Image (cartoon, rainbow, N blue to C red; front, side):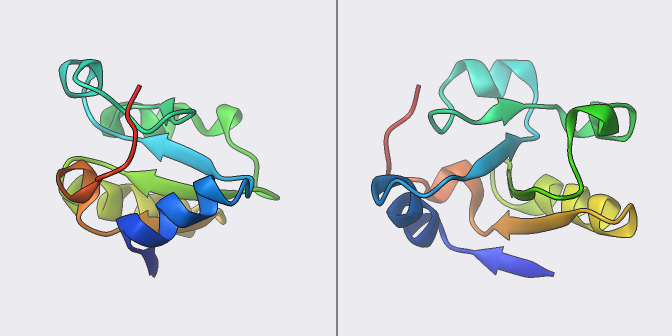
Length: 98
């Protein structure tokens, strides 16, 4: 499984690269702030939300600490998606939040 640090992902955002971020935390967690532009799809809903994702796109998966995003990555990889896990999750995120 591919992984990226919070610093590396933040650099991509700052450099204006197109990044598709999926935040798999629960509603209450996301209400406390998420990475700007991230799409919120709670982990439990991911299997029923595949129509919102495209296999020709790359996605960065994010959660609180990295566990749920790892599970989401494993599931999506098995479904044929191109995904990268953000290690450390939002606990390690030092960038802007919306």
